[in-house]
Length: 255
Length: 267
Image (cartoon, rainbow over all chains, first blue to last red):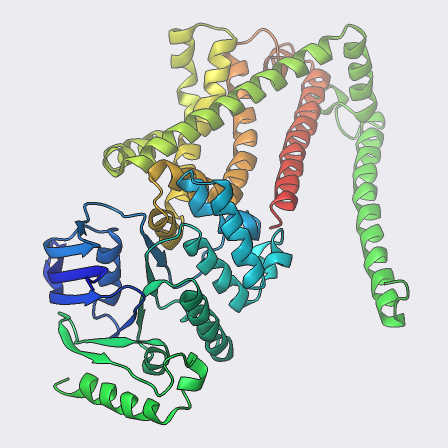
């Protein structure tokens, strides 16, 4: 099977008058269709930069990023990006927020709107369709933000620490929700986090980045006895601790 | 909600009592002032020729209402103020948008805007008369000159303070700069835009009066200058009182618009 996303030898630096800072150095990896890849690394190591490059928000300087064998030139609508905060607009209803992407790309076709309607039903937001975002709980807001991203039917989903703004209890629940939604919609996803437990509980593979300038330390395949185990149960599985220790060691050797 | 607890009822009662008390003393202060003014004028504690008195002002108002001159002067000032206000909003909105679109243009223009904004605008009025003539156009431009530069700066600042992450969201959804402007920048700057409106309506009135001082044959500003020159202080104070009422009403209208928008957007 050919991979959905191929990243090869990507290097990226930030330029300021006081000098050049290398954020990413020689990053090479690929993601298969339907896979859930989690990227972990110390904070400030360039994880978000990597996502911005993948999404085409910033252009690549060196190396190449290919999605289904088409080189990206600019932003690909085939990629969905979920930011740290939900950024639901208070001046729009939940429904209007969810179809924002369709509105921007002028894709408000009956099929797309029906898809949104179905997702709102499936993920328990239909009764809040005409509510204001402020009336939703933290978990519901995150689900609404995910539906907004999925409305454009992207083939690759990028998630930039989407749970970091939530309190711990909500975080565990939303983590479960988002995971099951992504699996149900059969999406390929790349999630960035600094939370190791979160990474192990969701990932098919974990990509471990080093400190800045970030390079790949290791790509770890995660296997649990039941491959369909939801994140919450994975946290209690015996393999969990083993993976945790392995990543912990990897992150802490040689600083 | 049908049955209030005793403490809640007590709280509401106290709140209302306080409210009535404030309103009552507000009017009392106003009426005592009028009364004191009237009595001191009648008993010659003050010179009614210079200080006028409430009854003389009322007389002047009735007299001016009979020949409609009061409505003409008020109407002209109001018209000029509103027109310059709308032009200020239009010009500053368009300019702020251009500045927001192009960082380079804004960087080039910033010092000039700051200089123009700190310039005392009344100093411009004589120049405007020479350039544009002693007419309504000059007065409207004078009204605009007081407000427009500050308004551009504040509106541009409000645009720039938009949450970068919200802008990023529009980009991740495949939107361009124009869509960023309409979906995020303008809606999130709306509260700031309303407070800019509130400040500017007052500034436009100031500018229009300055313009009328120098270049008008009608309007409240003209009335004030004319009355001071022929020493008809009754006219002057009448014009001032009408100005107070206009300023209050204009502010109130914008306050109502603000309230309406806030309610609609559920803020």
